[in-house]
Image (cartoon, rainbow, N blue to C red; front, top):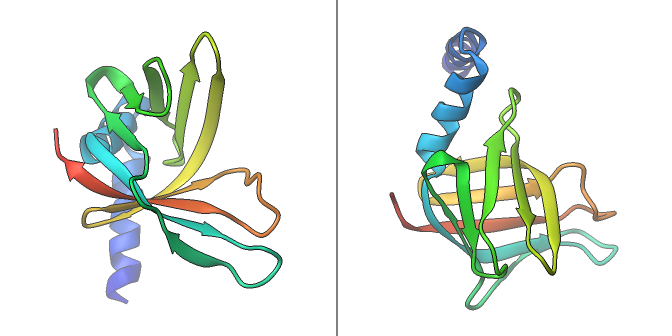
Length: 132
């Protein structure tokens, strides 16, 4: 019952927010540097998380700027009204645009592509390295 009440209160708060308010709520919690630590994938069977050594990083800055050390240029990020995160890079050598469902707890964040390019599902888990 407590969870139901919490969900109701959150929906009321988000329902009364404008687009910029929603973006500001999520942006405040995502700001900082995040490193990929695990990947979820399946090869036809049950999916599982696998550790990633020296994973790439995303750094989310003010003004919806994102830096990923796997791209040569800065990108942009924004949150939709539904809380989904869209990241866009328009580098000279590569174009990258993906929308994620985002889950976070403590210093961990799971990004699941939506729609998923994987038949059996896939996701990436990031650990917060720094908070900006």
